[in-house]
Image (cartoon, rainbow, N blue to C red; front, side):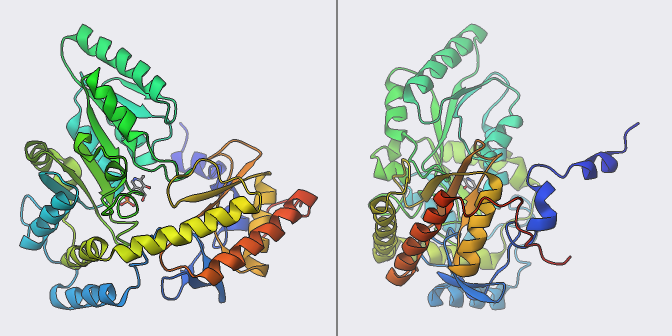
Length: 419
Ligand SMILES: Cc1ncc(COP(=O)(O)O)c(C=O)c1O
């Protein structure tokens, strides 16, 4: 018989295998100091483009005060237990009510984490006769939710509405043949890697031809898109046709937790049946109080979203003017596509961090195909013109070096921390 532990340590996985050179630098880096556009990395100040602190709320004095006051007043323990048993409070219910109103839905339910919350929601909503139709580039939490789904699932090519329709047709035929079950379509408001918005309006239009319900994960659209910041549905004018709207608090709200908003009867069904919340402790009071304050600021301070977009457009236009390929983004997420291997990518990132003091994330094989590199820049309302100009200059200079082959080194630079 094989020993499970022995097998695991033979190969640590595609990223884990580089940990001896990467840990604490390319992987598990420690950004220190106050959250903002400039933070400390290994003792040096860097311009940070890796945090989803879209509206710059993380370190806003009013937010810090509410977080601190609520922690002082309630501590981290209250309320104890799961919502259904002993962990409910008026503040939890107030936050749900305000989120529902903001998203123009009847009701909303809080989730402790986005990832396990949406996974568990998919499990709650779909039985074995139901068919899920979903986008090929859906976030891991949706894919893992589908792993819990005992029924059929049909994937459509990323953001390809024609293929979505084809899969809807297959799904409808299957449901008809079975004589029971229904269809749930799942997509995202903004795809977090490439920054392209999900084609929500076109998918909603398919409701004229097919019977299905639509669940949208709008983690990156909430607070950044739409006139009021209500997200991609508002931006595309189809919020009312989104049956269930999901977002995490981990991005625009710079906090933790998540929610699903929709019709009262369905949200109530989820409330009484979602295993990840029924069998887990509810969100601590300071998190709920902090989220109430964040939501208030997100709603009443449009200047934060305006600043975010002004920064995002300066960065995106500056990159395009310098000949960079930023793909199809129509959100603030800014990917920069380049050609190169994993080793080159890490050498370039080291140069960016050590000599240009720019901290951004890279995406390489196996997340994307071999030979491609994506530098993923996340602008926020907290960035300054100086941050943007320095970054554009650094990208021009390092790209020229990449093209000249300067980063064609033998192996991943040895940057790990002593452990
Ligand atoms: C699209 C999307 N959905 C869900 C999640 C998970 O949310 P959370 O961090 O609250 O678990 C993320 C990442 O944070 C995400 O990018």
